[in-house]
Length: 253
Image 1: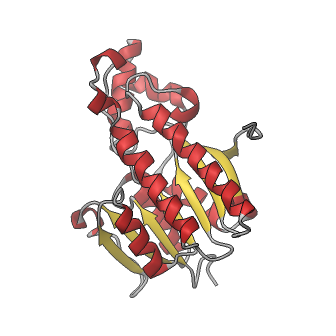
Image 2: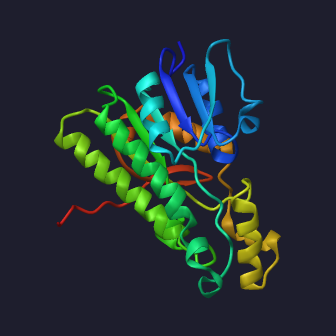
């Protein structure tokens, strides 16, 4: 029997990059996967056993979408991976609109889906995994408000986990912070921009980064969190070597 056989995994942002790898890993682990992306074209080639893959083209930042889809499918696993690609410029060359892009997409999406997961609520023993970014810890000076938005996603996951515990819902909620990778549509231009900022070649920048996070590594990490006590709560860095727990702080206010 496969690890996720008989379970429903809902992946928000399954159309490309790490989200695509996560959806494919859940399919391989035996889950029935509900895959959400902004356009049908992004999901057209996602496949699995008959009846095990269901695709939905929708705007994940729409609170009606979050409430409706969760109520319909009541997944045991919810992966929140969707997000916008930031405009790569120094901070003084941004407008407020470009600076706040990831607040209006990534943070908004995370807020709506976590809120609906707690309100429904998802069934006891469910797991919610929020994709943040290593930029939440290390910063990202060429992407406007991106790093701050990713830090807020991590905080939202922690706040929701605290509410799950306080209300005795039994929903495990965790965050994953992947390092920048040149293997996604978001990461490739960032690698080029940061290499130019440092005055080095892209090859040299990649060498300094070490082994990259691949879609398959991200998928394996999400399956790990969905099938072990590690997924009950907490935040994890994701590198080419896999998951590493991050330090946590007790709430003081």
